[in-house]
Image (cartoon, each protein chain N blue to C red):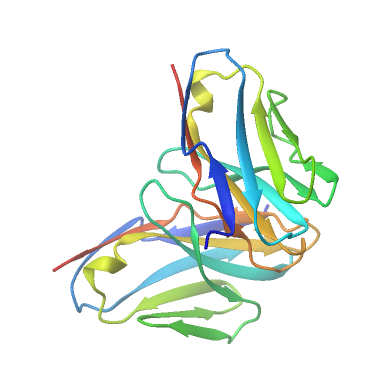
Length: 111
Length: 113
């Protein structure tokens, strides 16, 4: 069964304290791995798509990496406005584009 | 400008009273999805349309139906809402059903009294 597990469930950082979020996945055939940011009461906001092991993408303070079993979202020198829930999702072969989401990591950055 | 628009943003209904949620898009993408997200849980796919072709997830209750009258609009109908249907309902679009990115709307928060 295709599955996505994110850790930790919650992460509290001080402003400027870099860290990483983990997304482990098991899928029969990976089409793509997606990272989204979700603020309370809002829809997920797209961050990155990764397609193959070794791929990396960056946007401002965020960098996403992918291996055959997991993805990391690295946050460098976070600011309070980075506080949100970060969702990881995978698309598997022959699933019609269905996203299978992890439970998310709730990030809180204190000034 | 918003690509995916959902109305209403907040919906309150009574137990058993039918409700319809609306989603529209400005990009004419082929695929439209409906997800259900309960509090502190991951979004869960209910069904999707690839053009006019409807694709239902196996575990989506019969209580949930959908209509897509044209490329721009898609509706989620809940025929007899129960307390367990209280959730955020998210609409998403993509240009194909492959690895194209799904872009989400702001969601409709449904409360069932």
